[in-house]
Image 1 (cartoon, helix red, strand yellow):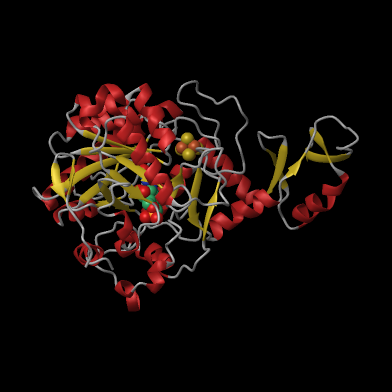
Image 2 (cartoon, rainbow, N blue to C red):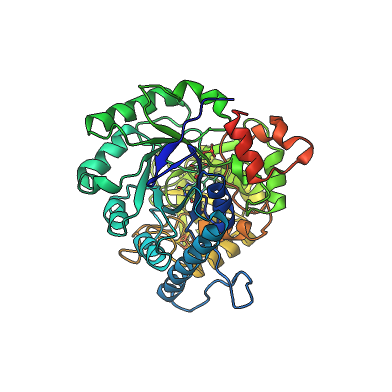
Length: 463
Ligand SMILES: Cc1cc2nc3c(=O)[nH]c(=O)nc-3n(C[C@H](O)[C@H](O)[C@H](O)COP(=O)(O)O)c2cc1C
Ligand code: SF4
């Protein structure tokens, strides 16, 4: 047993155990309701949350309207309906136990409208909002206007200080806590800054101490820090408990709760996770958001890595360095270094015969099938992100002004697909870097899938 003390989260004493929100549909009303029922905090993901038709069936149809702006409007309307539907489910399961939070990726287009719509439509059912990926300046004002607590997700003391100075200082009453998400270990998008080396992880202890010291200087001594990323078993975090350098603390679990009977992900996805080994998760920059992210090296991710490895620089004019012509199409020829010619020809001869430009004066090589899928995905874009490198969509201006980047992918399509029984080979599987622990942890021995109750009992016991 470990000495786990209750903390006040969103106005109520709860166990310091929090379900990390996971989009799309990695956490929902059922999973979060069960976390709250155990006296913990459950987190509904608002990213295209499921909603239901009159027969109680999940509405799977995506908008096929002709104009992207109309598809985008349908997406936002659906996300609000979904958030409200999941909040109602969570509330029915949890009753008055624990707390229910919602989570939104700030870089989603119109994230403010979605949060507002859900808080309006599910009044009294939601106690807190967590937001990461980007700097959610408006979160404090938005949550406070509903009397709901807010939890920015940051990966450094510096990021929080910027948010505080520019915005949160005026909305301190409803700042419920600060999530410190380890950018080298956490699943999903990771908040590595340009100053940090993806290859050189830093000790979370020092970084959390730095955050605590920054919070104390701002008079936020009582504000809990919620540690996320690489949290599996609290026995490993005992030195963070009752420690004045860390202060009030709670722990957010992202990857581990993905394998419970109440987790919404498919059995096939759970099976892949149960069989991963150390090193099977890659921290990489393929997300069309531009952020780093961590996902399992399945066929989907390996192909993105292979495409990136095949990348070649070019110039539009012949020069001493770029002296070898490469034909991109019947009307366009560029120049590459002679030393790259074999690399280009090997890919073309292996069937990667469609050559596409990136925004960085490089080309990558695709199969004709991959190119057809890419064109279709771009044509069906829903404008889900505020800025998308894959489609060049920008919510503010209609376009980012850059050419669409063929090294990335449509994240909405793949996350929606895997969340609704899509193939585990052909889709992105976000996961934390400790996912391999499923294989070693006795709780999952012989393929056992624990209930959320069993999981929480194990966590409370430090197992
Ligand atoms: C499949 C998956 C999807 C995620 N999606 C989101 C998300 O939409 N928003 C968010 O703030 N965090 C997201 N996360 C991060 C988790 O909430 C959590 O902070 C993180 O996974 C913690 O690290 P761990 O996986 O090592 O436990 C996601 C993580 C995973 C594994
Ligand atoms: S192309 Fe980009 S903006 Fe459009 S739906 Fe896909 S991920 Fe979202």
